[in-house]
Amino acid sequence: MKPVYLDNNATTRTDPEAVAVMLPFFTEHYGNASSSHAFGAEVAGAVRNARRQLQGLLGAAHDHEVVFLSGGTEADNAAILSALEANPERNRIVTSAVEHPAILSCVSHLQQTRGVEVVMIGVDSDGRLDIDAYREALTPQTAIASIMWANNENGVLNPVEELANLAHEAGALFHTDAVQAAGKVPIDLSESAIDMLSLSGHKFHGPKGIGALFVRKGVKFRPMLRGGRQERGRRAGTENIPAIVGMGKAAEIALARLAEEQIRVRSLRNRLEKGILQQIDDCRVLGGALDRLPNTSNIAFDCLDSEAILHKLEQAGIAASSGSACASGSMEPSHVLRAMNVPVSLLQGAIRFSLSRENTGQDVDRVLAELPGIVSHLRSMSPLWRERHPEAEALPESLIANGGR
Image (cartoon, rainbow, N blue to C red; front, side, top):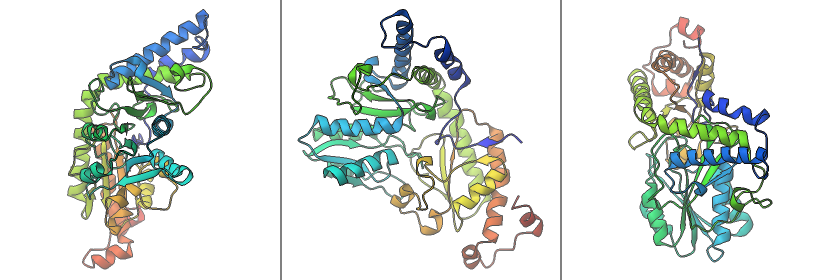
């Protein structure tokens, strides 16, 4: 059977149209965009076009507000470090307990090495940010508040415009990690209060190793990398032209197909959730009570281990995940789910299904056909489950022999 890929929040397949426009920039249009001759001018024009394509996806007022760099992690770090350097009299960062490691690791390092004060805002059991605590944390010492637009594990959307306005009331900058939001929900920065926004090409069917940081016109910015004058002096280093061109094309396609992401993909996600909840007892959609990304579903299965579920799904040709790929390899439960105070019996059994515009109803049907048997099989071997459900009948030998399928 054709494999089913439901780990699109980790990365997406590069769109063939994006690949096609990239290829000539490896062998035919190979000039340096900073060179003054015809080879360079030709490539510089392609970069300008890609910048306009990103501008369109973001609804930015000016194309020069888009800075190309290596991805979401560099963009997040650059925003934080710039805010501190541009405002040396301010030494506080306000962020949330459920941010991506690109933010959390950065601010933790600054706290330990530079004595920066970091305030972590908590969330409730649905993943909703504590707005009152956020408001109170914004003081005249705050250099920047950084709150993600959409959570990468549960898909919960934050009210970033409200958060940006509150930050400005305290005289602070506001940055949002929109790596998961870009290309999935409408973004219009033309009249927004958001000062800086991060995105990564490979999350919306562009290539890996390329991203962008939106820096609003007039915002003081200090580069993290120093060297040449590329990107108007905001990011030194020869531009990764093929990747920039590919991300630009992916942004153009994502904008054109955004309505599909909002309607068709959400319908598939909802059908997947409904089918799982109908067929499998004692499971919960995490963050399901709130507005979420249309493609993301995090479902926790009581008394089970997520790695065991994922292993069985992979044997059935289905790829999903237990959370952020950037935190994989850690034996610790998800920091996002811990911040949501998910009960211990559910915490270990959370599976993230993240769809894209390339998924179909047949993909959902495959999961709904395979997953109930997998869960039943694993629970039949779980001492905790048997202890809690002594009335549960043993799984038929035929299913156990077939791995629960």
